[in-house]
Length: 464
Image (cartoon, rainbow, N blue to C red; front, top):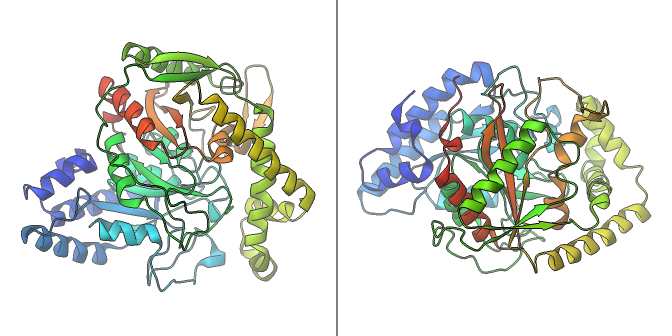
C-alpha cells in the first residue's frame, strides 16, 4: 500500500501545505487503492477519477501560489450517495433514483470544496439510508461480513484507505454503526450543527450529517469545515462554531464520564462489553471521573425513534412509492408501506415524549459532562444475516440490534462519536460512543482524542 495512505487526513494536509507531498500524488494513491479493493468491497456507486485528478492539479497550483485554504486543502474525500453533487447522479443506491441528476451541490459538498477537499466519488448507502447493512458493500476486515449501514460504503472505504474522510448521515446510527463495525471514527454532530441541504432525507426530524474518519483529529478538522448555520435547512441552528482543534490535546483530567447502569449493557456481545469496560478504566487512568448514571425514560427510546422516523420517511417517499413501488428493494418498500399506517396521533405522541426525553437528558448532564457507552450491541455479522441470537436464547432482528444503542443520540439530538476501542477474537472492530451536551462537540472530541492518544486501536489497518 502506498505510504501516503498510512497518513491521517491531518498529517496529509500538513505535508501538502509544506509541499512535501502533492495533491496529485494523494489522489492517485487513493484511486489505485480503490481500484485494488473495489472488487472485494464495492464501496462506491461511482468513482469520479477524472474530476478528482483535475481538482488535484488545481489544488497543487493554489498551494504553490500560497493560496492555502486550510487543513483539508488537497485531501481526497468521498460523499455518501445521498449528498448532491452538481451534474453527478444522486442514486441513494436505489433504482428509483438512478436517473436523477442534481444541478447544484449539497451544502456539505459546497463547504468541502471551499475548504479545498477533493471529492473522489459517491459511496454506497443502504437504499435511501433505510437500513443498517448496506447489502451492496462488504467489510474490509472480513469481506464475508457487513460494513454496517446505512453509511456502509463510507465506513468501508475509509477503513480500507480508499479515502481520507467520507461523509455519512445518521438517522438511527448510520454514521456510528459503520464506524463501529469498520474500525473508524464516526461523528454525529448535534442536530442542527451541520446543514442537510441537498441531502436525500430519511427523516427530517432525526437526520444528521457528519464525517467518518481515521482519527479523532480528522473528525475535528472535518467538522470545522462543515459546521455552520444554513437557512436552506429548516433544522439548522445559528449557534457559534468554536475552534474544534483548539484544546483537542488538553486531556480529560476531571472530566465527568457517565457510565450507564441501564440500557447500554442490556443484551450486548460479551467481547464488546469487556472492551468498553476496559475503555472506562483507561479513561479513569487518564484523569476522568467515572459517574454511574441511570438513563431516563430508556424504555421509550426505540418507540419514539421509530414512531417519528417511519411516518416521516413514508411521507417523503409518498409519491415515489406510488409511481415506482416495484423499483424499491423489498425490505425498504415494506418499511415505507408500514410507515403509512402509523396514525397521526401516534406520531404526535412520539414527538411529545421526545421532548420529555430531551428535557430529562438536560437534567442528567448537570452531574456529568459526557456519556460513554458501546456503539453497537454486536460486531459485524455475516452478510445476509437478519437476526442476532443472545446468550439467553432470545432472538432480535438485526435492525433492532444495531440501532438499539444508536437511537438515544438521534432522539435527543446530542452529539455522539464512535471511537475504536478494541477487536474481537475474530479480528472484528469494536467501538465506544461518547455522547455530549448540545453543541458541545468539543468535549466529545477531546475525550476521544485523549483515549486515542493512549491506545493504538485506530492505527490498525485491515489486510485487504
